[in-house]
Length: 272
Image 1 (cartoon, rainbow, N blue to C red):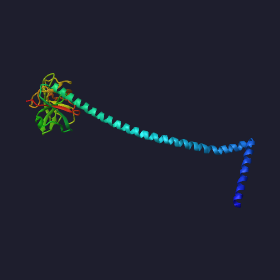
Image 2 (image 1 turned 180 degrees about the vertical axis):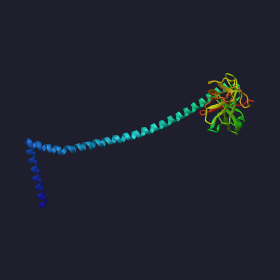
Image 3 (image 1 turned 30 degrees about the vertical axis):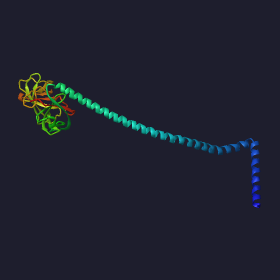
Image 4 (image 1 turned 90 degrees about the vertical axis):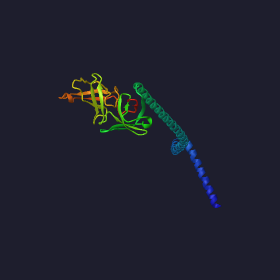
């Protein structure tokens, strides 16, 4: 009981002292200013900190809301991007199909005098020694060995083997290939053979000594040899190399067909 009374007295005394100090501070000028500044310096950082924390918490709520919105937008954009990519692939496929059909149309118009079977290249072996291609035509399509194969620009080669669904074609640039040809200017007969180093050129040999072969001459099949029909374009003379012996001179013929880019072909079915 006495302790409670003492504690109460102490509290009253402290309260009175605080009131006296407040009065003194409020009446003084310099002293009041000093203590007010001290109190302000003590309270303001706390107040600023509380204000910052409040704003930070409020901002975080907005931040997390924005993150959720961005995730949803990103998901929608990914979906739209996927749909656009699919549409682009479909358009590219349609474009490729249209280009293939145009090539077939050009080929059939160009070689309208022949009965032809359209196909496309499904395999290539264009190395130094073997330059062959595989096409998607076989026995079921009426393709036989020794049938001539042509492209949009000219002669490709001839069929050397056939399966039920495919055919192997020896191209004119193959080292084992030999094509009887004629020159557009003189109509002289020559022979064009494949070379080891070239993938788009032939070596024209057995040029008659009296023949005037020049750069730019057009070369086409002569119809001799029993494989290729007459008049199919092969290429143009790129270079003529003269030797001391005129019988040994030769020319380099650049093929009209770009075998690295060859995709569509026609097989001539009525060349007998």
